[in-house]
Image (cartoon, chains in turn brown, red):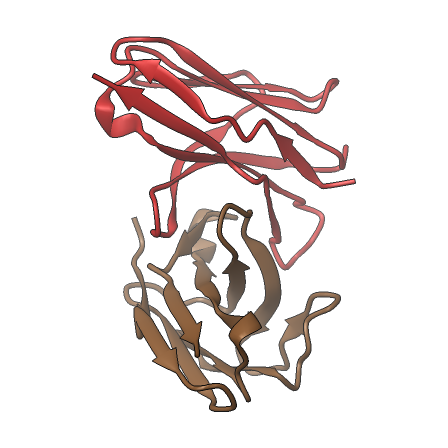
Length: 116
Length: 112
């Protein structure tokens, strides 16, 4: 199957700092990528849909000024958590849709963020 | 009301057992259905798609009942390596964004 990478795999930062997470589709082009967040023992919650060359679409309750998304190319989307706080600590997972295979989404390995 | 509901379990079964997971979804317009597997602290991985006629992949059998908006996964001859959380996932094909809705997942532990 298609491969999606994320970087970094984990990060620890101080409260108030910003953290950037990269999501790359390695062997296919993805017009659309998705960003999810997962708290312990909870389901994945969609935060936003990232569209190449246009603004991201955010889910209700997700602050677009806090979670900045940039999808500058067909293989890269970035999520920047600005002014991170301890409650932002979570598992952030991106996915990319391989349009050659319909609606199948492939997930990145996730980024575990811990804000002290 | 959640889009996708699953029994969170946990299910604890011995090796070789048969175990079944159920899932219901609320949007009758949903068109695509999947089971994903998620290991602890890892990303979800596609286990299998679910088709209207039902489908089988080795020890795994998936069923879909559109009238009842119900999806199931049957695992036969459980292996230790089957221990994971199984996520029921639904896609609304009407959405061009291809949005997936995830259930909370059902945790399975297979013991020797």
